[in-house]
Length: 275
Image (cartoon, rainbow, N blue to C red; front, side):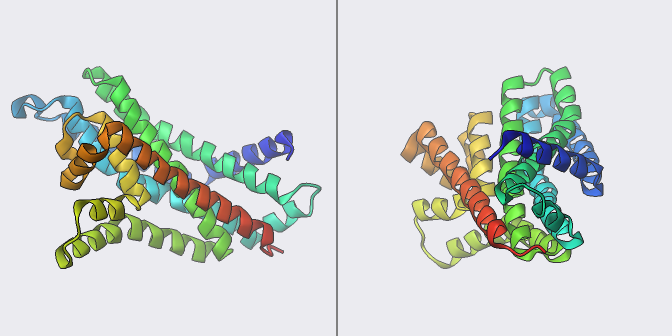
């Protein structure tokens, strides 16, 4: 594995991603939504007796875990599948480089492009909240959580692309994964809760198996001292494991998702026929 070759592929991927329509539209849309949600979250805060930052953070938290997967899943899926479809990957593989260097370089470039997109998207909200005396450290936790979620979802998108090898199928799979993780998983947990007498431990385990819920709970754990924002199952988990133990468990869930997605994507990429 040659670092110089990996960095060249990463820079190539960043340039390609930034020029893409999805990057531009997604970044601008996320920036506008984050700014609007932050402004609405601060409206009437003093009248309701809730801190400006608490309301803005809760509002942004819901936006982040709805929009970030929608931005990053197709980003990862379109890159690999698009280049496999137009023959670019076959051309790269014909060069004196290894598939590992190509894969790592493209993944690093995608993660860099995702980081740039989130940084630009959060910029306006950060300035607005900072101008109203918001907590920089807790807002940083929110941004860090969004980045962590972006890493996981980008790697899942890459995995879907190596399975599909076709732009249309890869993007359809990415949208299906978004719907599954954002909506259907929550409805499934609610259905299980309604149909069976599951204990709080089982309910919590099913919920945090979803990486979105794991990251969302992790962020909520640090940005607010109000345990009720975690929900009744989350409150039970804090009382059972403690804040530190719960945080370690959630980080472990995210790490497992990232490692499995990256490892499976690389395994499929090495063995795939992209000619």
